[in-house]
Each structure stands twice: as structure tokens, then as C-alpha cells.
Length: 585
Image 1 (spheres, rainbow, N blue to C red):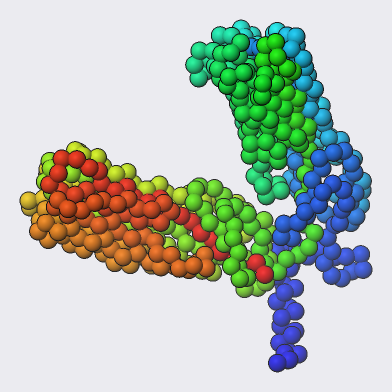
Image 2 (image 1 turned 90 degrees about the horizontal axis):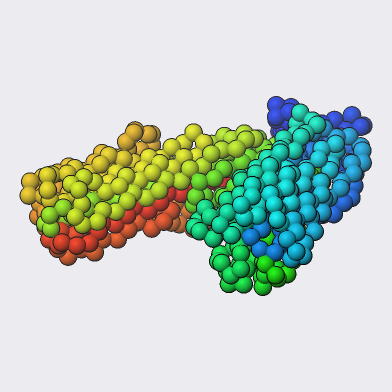
């Protein structure tokens, strides 16, 4: 059906108003429409309404039009020392630029090479080379010590046995929109082993930290998510040991090369554009290309040390206006017209840009499930433990977000209780959090026998412990939320344990020797598949039950320990999960 003229006018007015309210209306040269900068240079990829230019070799970033850029520069890493007992090369420094204005200009980029490896003649490594872009300089990683101390740089090189690691200095910046990263020292040498090269995120490890004759690992680099890969840059190189002493140091995360020995060479650091090389047959591993990783040290009377990894530059800018939001974080899948971000561990949900659509441009659906409570244990070989309560369960749609990072915390499952327990409760589940939404951990089940033990309160309450008298289940929906995040645990009037509360139903009461069933959970299809989560743990039965732990990332409660036995543990609670869904096309 063709829209009426009035309807079309309303649509136009609504969309234009949204442009103005979000501050993203940019007038073109002709005085109408929305225009964005364009650019050439490097390897170009897209993510949502952003373009990312990655430079792994020197070149020009050529801008047409006016806009703002974010950028990251990484220098070249230092190389390792050689002839045994030497230190690892340092990872390079970084510079991060946020929202810098550019306008129809050509910006030269120089990519710093890594320091060259050295032969096996007690030689110190070589310092890397600087990377430059738009007046900013990411300085190089320091050289490793061959027969002396580590060299200075953005991060310090590792030292030979008995010497001190090099000093790191944070790269100086020119613009107020830029931040230098680095300034970490190399590890000290000791006990016939060298110190690890300093990384862009932490100091190199001192020799002997992990034991006598054990060479130091390279420090980890610094993590940057400008290209949405969350890579580390500037990992330090691993050090070498004397003769055949194992093991050599590993390279730090962000492309650090591993140290070398015949029997136990170090491994290269990963989580990078290119993983650092492993030490092989006395040859130190080289830093990963375009990571700024430091080179690993070479072994006595063997091959050369590893070279430092070259640097890189990454530039990002908005090139179009999207109808729907763009976001990153977690494990991302698609289902129809929606993207789903699943967080099985704590992280950040980052909204990169809000869409122009008046209904879906800034709204998400969420599911936040806390960790389930652990089942109650057994104290004296008689009464069974109560089931753990399910983790709190909260879900809603039409939740408004803005361009920022939202903390995501995943609650751990409550601990199980071994025999004999301590007349308390199973471990309480941890809270899960997304933005302003908190789901509370499930309550632990009460221990069986001993003094009567009630189930603990929580998102859902734990079941009471089996006893010769009676116990009560813990209260669910604690603290109170609307809608309710869970239910109560089951009560006990016998030797069986009460069932832990679930999101949909309370735990069943225990009578005589029979344990109460855990309360049912809730099925949800936010991922495109129906999955039931937040099920309460079953109460232990007097002598016959086999406790089961809650599955990971379900928020299920753990089962209570069986009674009438002198061995066995209760079930642990399952960890929580956070899922965020939104329309992307």
C-alpha cells in the first residue's frame, strides 16, 4: 500500500529529528544530505558503519573530506641477546589516538622495523625502530643484554645473568587526544639465566622467579580493540638459560618470541596479529610480524637470537550512517536480522554507534543469569544435603543503550561441599551484571544432619538440609526484583534434602527419606534456540542419589549430597551467562 503524504511527512520529520538529537547530522558541500570522510591507504576492512585501515608497511593515509579518526601506533620490538644466559628483547611502545579531526590531507606513515637478531658471541640485542603517524611516535622496544644489563626503550630489555633489566619509558605524545602506552622494565638476570624482556603491559619476569635456573618470561603486551580483534601488542621476548638448564622463558602475549635451549625452549606469545616464534634448536624465536613483539634470546654456542617484530598502524573512522546499532564484545552470532552477543566470561559490551531507526536504533534485549548455588553437603553420615538454588534470572526487551562500554560480569557457580561438611551450606553463586541490571547468585543448599541447617537466600533459595527435626528452604528473589528473579527452596521434615528453587517454580519439599526435586527453570530463545536455564538442584535422597553439578553458563543449582554415607560431595552450581540481542539489519 502506498503511504499517504501525511505519513511520509511524519516519517521524514522523525528521522531528521533523530539525526539532530544524536549529534550526527553533517552537512555536505552542497548544503544537504549526510557526508562522511573517505580515505585510502593500507588494507581496508569494514565493521558496521566503520572502516579500518591497517598499515603493516610504510605508506600514506590520504583523507578526502572532514571527519574524526581513532588510531593506534606500535613501534618495532627489540631483539634478544645471544650466547646463553641472555635476556629477551623488549616489546615496543604504543600510542593511542581518540577522535582526532582530519580534513582533506595526506598523512605519512612510517612502520618501525624490529631490531635484527644477533649471533652467538655474547652480543646484546638490537633496539627496534620507531613508528610515526600524524606527529605521534610509538617508540621502539629496548635491546636485550648479551654480556650486561638490558637496554632502555619504550620498554626495557631483559638482562644477562647477574645484571639488571633495562628501563622502560612511556612514549611521549604531542596531541591532547593521544595516550602513550608502555614504560615497563626488563627482568633481571640471575642463577645462570636471563630476564624476560619488558612488555607494553607489564614488566619482564626476573630470572629465577619460577625456580632456580629458570629463565624469565617476557612481559605481556597491551590489548587494543580498534580493529575489533582485541589483540595484544608489544609482548616481551623470553630469556635463555645456561647450557641445557630448562626451561627457557616464554614470549609475552602480543607476539613476544620464545627463548632458546636444546631441551625446553620457550614458546611464542599469542593473542596477536601474528604469534611470536618458538625457540628452536638454540635459535631464539622472533617477535611476531606487525606486533612490536620482542625477540627471544639465543642459546650458548648455538644459533642467533630472535629478531624483534615490526610495528603497525591502525586507523578507524565512520564512513556511513547505519540504520541500526553497531556493537562489539563477547561471542557474536547472527539469527535472522539480529546479532546476539553471548558472554560466558566477564568482559565489556561496547556500543560503537547508535542507529537512526526510531524504534530499534538504540534498543537491546537482554538475558542475565547469575551463578547457581552449590548443593548442601553431609555432616555425619545420615541426613542428605539440600539442592542449590538457581541463579537469579532477569530478561527484558526495549532496554535503551548509548555509545559507551557496558560492564558485563559473569557470576561463578557456588562451590560443592565434600564429606564431611561443616554444618553450613553449599557455596553461594556469584552475581551476574549487565549495565544497570544485576541478577543475584543462587543460595546454597543446607547441609544434612548435624545442627539443622536451612537453605541460604539468593536469586533462588537453597533447599533445607535433611535432619531428624525440620529445616526451611532459603528465600528466593533476594533481593527483590520485579519481575521476580527466582523462587524459594524446599522445606524439610525428614532425612531427605529440600529441592533448590528454580526461576519458574519453588523447590519441592522433602518428606521422610526422599529428597525434593529442584524447581523448574525457564526456556528462552534469545539465541534462536530454546534453552532452559536457572533450574534448581535436586535435594539429596537418604542413601541412593548421585549428586550432579549444574552445567556451565546455565545458572543451574547443584544437587545436594546423598545421606547415609561417609563419602561423596554435593554438586557445584553452574556459572551464569549474559546474552544481549539487537537488530542490525
